[in-house]
Amino acid sequence: MLKTAIIAARAAGEILRRHFGSSLEVDETTRFDVKLRVDKLCEEAIVSILRQAFPAHAVLAEERGSEGDSSHTWIVDPLDGTVNFFYGIPHFSTSIALSLEGRMEIGVVYDPLRDELFACERGRGATLNGRPLRVSAVREPEDAVVAVGFMKDDRTVSRGLRALSSTIHRVRKVRCMGSAALDLAYVAAGRFTAYYEAGIRTWDIAAGEALLLEAGGRFSSVETGPHTHNVFASNGLVHEALAPGFPLNP
Ligand code: IPD
Ligand code: CA
Image (cartoon, rainbow, N blue to C red; front, side, top):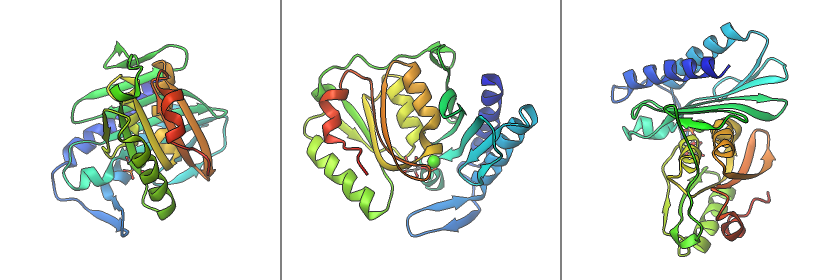
């Protein structure tokens, strides 16, 4: 199953590399977001690979929503960081996870421009391009680099801003990179110390959660709506010290 997820993530990565920087077909724009034809192309490629290998499994994917009913569900974000992709900012990823009765068994996050493949299977550790991954050893909040993401509805924006203003002076730096899947993969890889976002969707974080837990991190979340969560994730060592500044209650 991990091998198939990797094949699917690389297939999407190939499509993303081909289209990045070229003129893009926009399917839909809202005031704050954009949906590209390439999101759908990647999702079709991923889902057809997964379906061919595991026809009985269910799928939850950003563009198509929920399909099928099974204890095994593939959770797919074909392009995490669509706005970055659209503006030519070279930071985005493909995210694929397998959940077995609600627990993440497999996580793959692929950054096609850097050719970085983060992968894990529950109980077997996480890897970056085949090499074992570990969260950072940072213990003190003042040494922490914290990634923060923003959904655009008023409620989650004001929550994120409050969290930022209460913690920005306590940590070394805050980063707002635009791909939640990569934010979590970077915490797993020891690049970031922690990640926070209110109102983030399941497909953005499923594979990242699996990676982080396998790399020795800690993941706290509260479901705030259908496929929607408030999340604070860290290397574990700074969790108690920083979590109060990043509240999860709905
Ligand atoms: C977005 C990214 C971003 C996060 C947003 C997400 P998308 O996903 O993960 O980092 O802050 O909340 O919507 O729309 O590019 O797939
Ligand atoms: Ca996404």
